Picture (cartoon, one colour):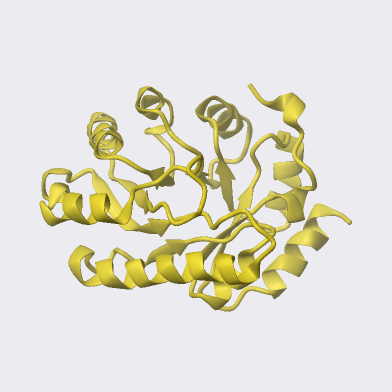
Amino acid sequence: MSIDRQLAQVRATLPAGVELVAVSKTHPAEAIREAYEAGQRLFGESRPQELCAKYEALPRDIAWHMIGHLQTNKVRMIAPFVALIHSVDSARLAETIEREAARCGRVIDILLELHVADEASKTGWAWDELAAWLAADPFASMPHVRVRGLMGIATHTDDERIVRRDFETLRRRFEELRPRLGEAFDTLSMGMSDDYPVAVACGATMVRVGSLLFGARDYGTEK
C-alpha cells in the first residue's frame, strides 16, 4: 500500500488533539517527500547526521523531531533547526541544549524521557532522579529551553497489560508534573507502530509511527 494511503489509515485512527510524528529514520528522502506531499509535516529521526542531511534535502516547512538517544557532542549539529527533542534523559544533555540554543539565538522545545519499561537497555530518567532534579527548578536558569512534556517507550512485549501499565505510568507522571511545569507542558509522546492505539487510549497527545507508514526500515542506509 502506498505511503499516502497508509498515512490516511493511521490518521483516521487518531482522535482530535493527537499529533502524528512520522518516524522516517533510515528511510530515503523520496519516501519522506511522498508523505510530505500527502500533507505530513512532522517527521522523527534518531541520528543527527541523517537528520541534518534530510533537513538540507527536503522542504523547510518540515518540523524535524529528534526522537533517538542524543549524545551531548551532537547537539550542535541539530540545534539551529530542530523543532522538538523527545529524548532528553539527563541534566547534562538539557544543559548542553541550553548552551547550543543560546548560541543559535533560539528557544528549543524538549521532552523529558522517562524510563518506564521492564528493560534496562531503554534510556530515560528514573522517576525519583527526575523528580529530585526538577525540585531544584533547573529550568529557571535555562531560558533557551522550553519543556513541553514527557516521552517514554513501553516494554517490548505482546502482553498488552504490561504495555498499558507502562503508558498509564507515563500519563500519571505527566499529570503530576503539569502543575509544576506550567501551561507549555502539554505533550505526552508515547506509542509506536505496534502499540500506539493503546497509548492513545491511555492519553497520548503525540504518537511516533514509522513502519506502518514506510514499511520495514532500510538498515542499509544507516550510518
